[in-house]
Length: 209
Image 1 (cartoon, rainbow, N blue to C red):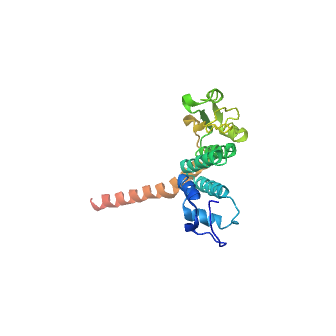
Image 2: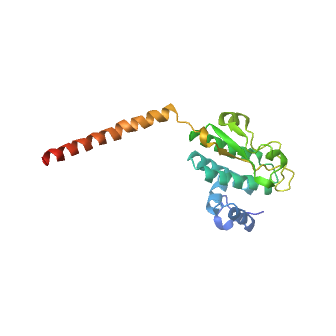
Image 3: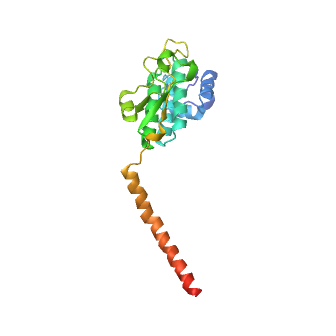
C-alpha cells in the first residue's frame, strides 16, 4: 500500500513515497491530493484520485479560457492513463481537442487545420496533415485523435495520436453581436468624449479671442 493511515482522515505526513513521487511527477500538491482523498473511503485507489484532480484542473482552466494551461493538464492526464494504468487515453485526448475547437470558435474562427507531429508521425496521421475542416463539423465528427493512428508511444498496445488543431487565420469572422457591442461601446464612450473635447476646445478658443 502506498498510503498508511489508521484514522478516517488522511494527513499529508502519512503519504507514502510512491504516491508522493507520482504527485511530484504530475505537478499535484500533497495537500490537494489529501483534500480529494478524504472525500472518499481509504480504499479508493490513489490513481483514481490523481486522475480526478488532473481532470478537475483541466476543466477549471478550460472554463476560464486558459487554453494552453488546460491542454497541458490534459496531456499530463493522458500520459498518466497510458503509463500508470496502461490504458487507452483516447477520451482524454478527445476532450482536449474538443476544448481547443470550442475556444477557437469563441474567438471567431470558423475553420481549423490539422497538424501532425512531423517526421515522427505515423503514415495514417501524415495523411491528415494540413487538412482544413470546419469547426462545427470537427465538433460533430471529432476526427482527432485520429482513430486510425498506429503510433504506440508508450508501447502498451494503445495508439497515442499526437495530431493537433491550429486555427485558420483567414477564417475568422466578426459576428453581428460583436459589431453591435463595438458600436454600443463607441456610442457610450467615444462619442461623449469627442463632444467633451469639442466643448473644451471651443471654450479655450473664445477665451483667447
